[in-house]
Length: 190
Image 1 (cartoon, rainbow, N blue to C red):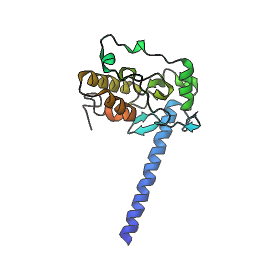
Image 2 (cartoon, rainbow, N blue to C red):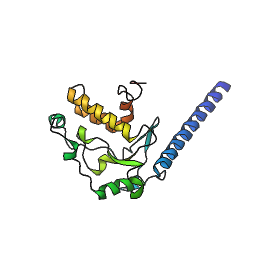
Image 3 (cartoon, rainbow, N blue to C red):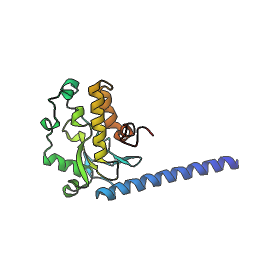
Image 4 (cartoon, one colour):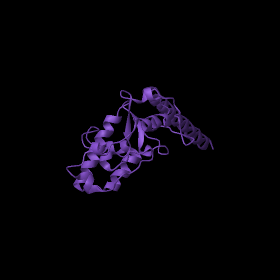
C-alpha cells in the first residue's frame, strides 16, 4: 500500500513540475515578445503560443495554416519567386498581432515577424489563418524556421517528399522538422 501511495505522490509531483515548466516557458515567451501571457482574441478565442523544447510554435486554433496552391510544378519552377504572391496588408498584420495579444508597435521588426505558417514556397496563403507573429527569440525562432522552409522546399522539388506532407509537417510542428534538418540543429535528429 505504501508503494502505491508513493507512486501516486511521485506522479502528482511530476505533473505539478510539468505544469510549472509549461507555465514558466509561456511566461518566458511573453517576456521575450513583450506580449501578455494570454493573447488577444480571434473570434472570441484567445490565441496562446505553444512550446516544443526551446521553440515557440503557433496556436493551432488561431493559426491552423492555409494553402494557396498545391501545384508542385508552379512552386518548383525556376520562375517562381515568393515576391510574386506575397501580399499581406498592414491591416491583416495588425489583426494577427491583436490575435496574439501584441500591440502593432510590438509586432514589428526586431522582436517578431509576421510569418506564414505554411510558407509561400510551400504553397501557403496570405490569409489570416496562415499568419502568426513568430518571435526571433528564444532561439530557435523565426530565422531557424526559415531554414526549415527552404529545406522542405528542396525536399519537395527533389521528389523526396510530397507537397502535402511538407505542408502538414510545417503546420503541425516546424521545430520537429528543424531537428531533422542536416546541419541546422547540430547535424540532424537528436
